[in-house]
Length: 228
Image 1: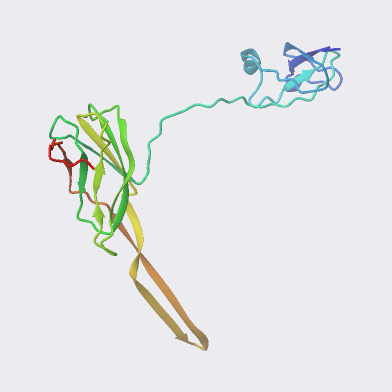
Image 2: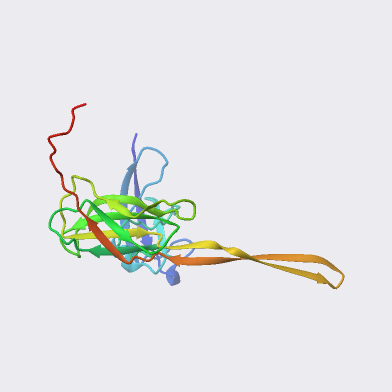
């Protein structure tokens, strides 16, 4: 059988509280239905917020017989999304193609060697956007330290429509690496065992781009191609 419990939410002024019968400056009747002993969530309206003090030190909850009922105060929150500035280690470049037709690839011209970067390419009608993703996280690299292998070309999909502007996003444009030189310091004397200290130097290098070239391709129909 459902039991109707009437909770009387009272705000008692601290100076008027008596041990047996407290004096209430403001009260609000709250009604809820429960089948058994359980928690009942009761939202506080704006009148309760206005009458009580900060952090609700004078808030009391009484049952229908005037007995104090334990209560827990919890702040209700909601999820909201805000735009924040990104501080990632990346570089963005916006370029315009020399032709109206869609390019087949974009070539990143850089004087650097021994690197590997990931580049995402977007197309749009103006530098302000909006942008459409054409190619995400393509790798450009130079492995001259190990072999004569270099690729700085970002290939567009064949189905990509022509755009007036292209936006390139380079990830990890500044990298750090340990220097090939190591400083070794040896200390001895004063009756102590020899101590050796090894110190390595870190080198920071920024990815430099001289220019970005556009590449175009055309199709030719050849009648003399043999049929396999």
